[in-house]
Amino acid sequence: MMTGNINLLWDGNKKFFLYWLPEFMLFVISIYSGSKALANISIPAYLAVLNSCALINHISICVLHWNFKIYEAKDWIFHFVIGAAAVGVVYSDPMYEIESYFWLYVHIISFSAIVVFIEFNKDIIEASKIELLYYNYIFSVIFFIPGSYLLGDIFEAANFKHLYLYKFYMGCLASGILGTILNLLRISLQENSEFLVYNRLLPIAHIMASFLSLLFFEFHTTAEHNIWIAAVQLVSLLGNFTKRKGNEE
Image 1 (cartoon, one colour):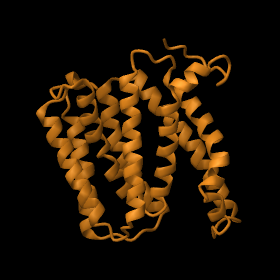
Image 2 (cartoon, one colour):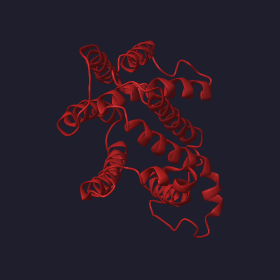
Image 3 (tube, rainbow, N blue to C red):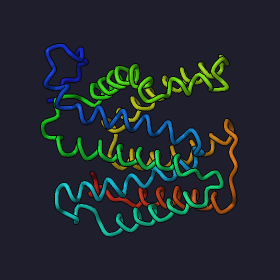
């Protein structure tokens, strides 16, 4: 039952917390791995490879329901083309580092696992999407306070060259605020607009974010790498705009 209200995490709701603990852990893994990946991968490449999440989600949901006819053949073709082009993005990256892409793959898998977990439990979910987002943030703060020490990141931060620049802290603050706003907007779009509208806006947002990143960040690239990125984003855009209403997930 959707309560729509945010209650305190431990306000007589320990059973709820324990039930959703796997999802909370997956959320922590997804944000940690995503930040590690973005440390050395350009935003356009990151977003392009991230499109392959849809293929993993499709396969996982079909296996979960043991029904591979949930999606049309056209959808499978689009997603396999995106997956293949994403491989091209990875191996044409002039800044390629195996560790960074390892973390990106971890991010994709953990994000897809969250989708599958929610799909598997959708009939017994006792929280709204906003409540779940709230609990995820609370749990991530609780986890990373000791976790940053145990993972060694707190010691690496001591050698970070921008540690004493106010712009770094302003950027962190802005990132947190904008990330929260984007998540709330995503939930609002999912709940208040049609499935097709949200799915068509997503690739457009990826393309816009890729272009905007060029204004704020410097990174080395090549013509081949740019072509692969453009191919992934355009195929994703085309695939979502050719979906019919009956293909709702």
